[in-house]
Amino acid sequence: MKEGSFFKLIKPEKELVYLKNKPAVYWEKKGQDFALSILDYVSKTVPAYKKFLKNKKVNLNLVKNYDMFLGEIPSLGKEDYLKFYKYLDLFPNKSLNNAQTFSATSGSSGEPFFLPRGEEQDWQYEYISRIILKENFQVHKKKTLVVIGFGLGIWIGGIFTYKVFEKIASECDNLSIVPVGPNKESILSVIEKFGSYYDQVVLCGYPPFIKDLVDEAKLHKVDWKKYKVKLFTAAEGLSEEFREYLVKELSIKSPLTDITNIYGTVELGTMAYETPLSNLIKSILFKNKELIPVILNTLKIPTLAQYYPHHIHFETKDGDIIVSGFGSAIPLIKYKFPDKGEVIPFDEMVNRFKVQGIDLIKEARKAKILDLIQKVPFVSVFGRTDSAVMFVGIVVYPEYFKHVFFHENLTNHVTGKFTLETEYDADQNQTLWVHVELHSELEDSMSVVDEIQKLVFEALLETSTEYQYLYGGGGSDYKKKLLPKVKLYSKGHVEHFNNKGKHKWTKK
Image 1 (spheres, rainbow, N blue to C red):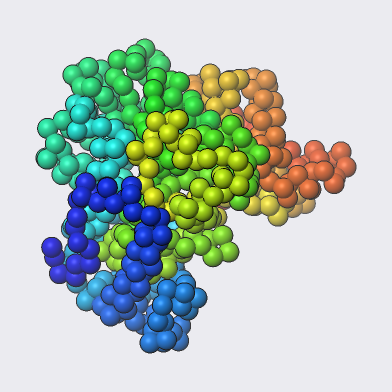
Image 2: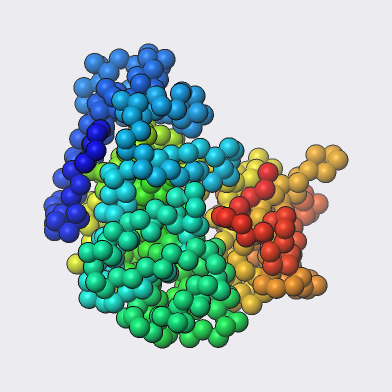
């Protein structure tokens, strides 16, 4: 271990029995201890954080317990911390010893920022990946081909995944890795050449890219049933409609275990992931939509992940997600993301269902995932405030509409990618535009436009109570102005769908 080491690099196989059997309160206490420990470490070793606390007039001698950590320690962000202080001052002891690999933010909301990773930060991803590969994908029993379709290069997804999976593969004879990157034809070629030699194929990639890959495979007449596909996705959430689409198209047999979505960021690496239990919860809510606001305090099913509180600390304030962790060689205390969501302790989640007459543990037993349950907390993530548009004073998230494009009337026409944009006319009247990518060439089809507009409108009406209120209180002319408008584009259109890097769901 290198200078500035904070974690004991324990393999999760040694902790799985505890993760499953220790009571939830045990892990909550571990999380509180972690928060206080990392605060102590960073405040003593990181020059920038010392200056930050001094500027905020925070006296750490008065922060004596976890409640005071929550109440007295201010949050920080990219502008007032990462970009505000000298770069070297952000590191423990101003040392680059842990900077083995640099990754960059995508720059979707401004200039990219570079964050380094070392052994400890890779270990956090390795810890989660080992559990997923063993518990969900059973790689210790099945010969597995992993095809990495995340972007390779300076972005975190591809290189980070390859480094960690390659390390695991060095200890596991059943695991082979092909780091292709986001090239659909190459991935399909690899699968068709080598997939039949393996018991299963794990596809890794961003959800929109996986959708593109599935569409491309239809042209190649790929028979997915031959390959027993598993999915390992990241960077954004999966709607339940999208999950059902993937299950059908890829002939996935066990959607609760065979599809795993990571919640991570370049700032703090892999923070949480959607487990078989969280997938079960989402599937229950999808069938009982009236329970969504009761269980998850939102009108649309969000990303719902579990996390290890002894590795990373989540809290929420005014709906904002705030995280403390050592996910890069630049540790962060109470880093405020532009994500909206909620932290839900394990026992509280079980109790929320119990109040509604549903025994979550009994449901898990019926779904045959009881032995996969880990009694660690949940974090729900609804959307990013920097990836939304404002329309008539309402925050409109892309997540409101992603499921729309998997409707049976649309899947043969559209790729699933769209871009939201608010446009103003000369009189400053607003129009909400939905720019939609087609599978191939531009169709001159008003029926497709009409169907998309109808489904988008219904989704907005269902999801946003503010929109519902405005629409219900207006006259016919006002209602017409509130209707979203749709424009179709051929695949790969240079302005909205150039397929370079991660897709941007909003245009500002």
